[in-house]
Length: 269
Image 1 (cartoon, rainbow, N blue to C red):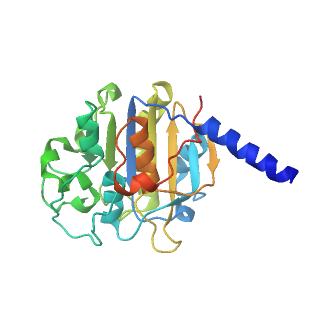
Image 2 (cartoon, rainbow, N blue to C red):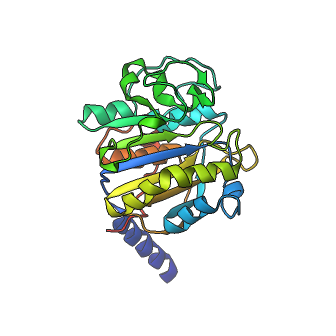
Image 3 (tube, one colour):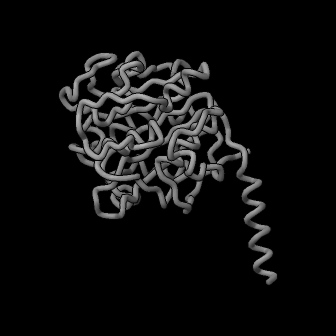
């Protein structure tokens, strides 16, 4: 009985300690492709990602929502797969999403997609760019916030409140190798990762789904000024990740994210 009450006390203490989420000045979410947790973590071909995992919070029980790619991106952006079960393109979707909620609150959002030829591009693909990996492209009213990665600012103070970064299929591990994706992240994202540590900001690196080998278990890493480094074993998914961002900025909870558990136990007070 004493052990039971001790466990209850510990749980309550952890809940209080984990309660309030920080409000980063900027959040950058980078989405990689089709690799399981075990293919990335501990892999010598991904030295940079594993360094990030040691510097930040690594979730060892993080999961994609479904297969294939496109509905996972929609889950992270809109809190629902919206009935989409394939990589069909083009889609025309409506209703609220992370971008629309941020904009309605006077905050900002931009998606930066590598190899997309121009802002607001509506095509399904261009070279190694794939619209199926760029959920904002399915909301025509948000075309002004759909940018190529070439527009990602060198001055990080000019970043929006929340940004999605989508490498193209050569660099997101879909067509290219794990080593190639790892090198792209180091070259293009490490500057922001270092800056975020000193400027109340947050980097999230995650995957859309696994390769079908591990029940959709993926790696998710958080690095930033308020992140407590370590490995975290509780289960999370794209809906919980979205809920965390929603709660950071006091947004309404979109669709399935309202049922998810937020991520409130990795923050330094």
